[in-house]
Image (cartoon, rainbow, N blue to C red; front, side, top):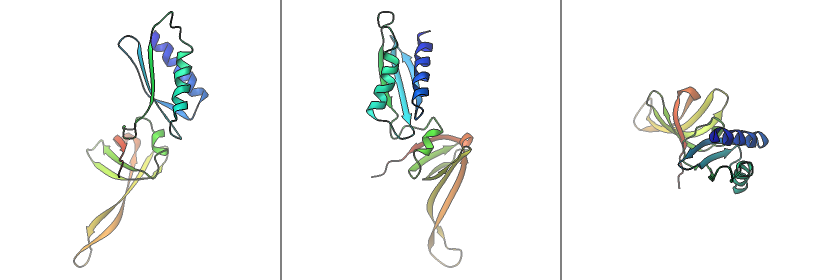
Length: 154
């Protein structure tokens, strides 16, 4: 019952702020509410405050005691929503596919069906000795992706 009420409040907040979306939501222990959000343009502290207030100001502490934590998705947290791909265009991703492939490359394109990943590889020359750098590309459907996350390089 309490979880349904909190979920309704979150849904209402995300209808008001369509640039934000829910990544994870759970209630553990003694009504310890944990919410993880993301946004099409990233997440600011003010965005977390907005979601927190949307929940906290509509629950009665006299009726139900609770703790509330609203955070943003971490930089290397695996994607759970297709909207996360668009905001990471141009970044390097690590992709695990359902057929046990592991790919790493730059996210070049995103559409409603899937993504395009690009990377460079060294291959033997077709004629003669030595290697040549070639540009590789993989088109992946969202349904074929098991896990995707941003790779941060320094």
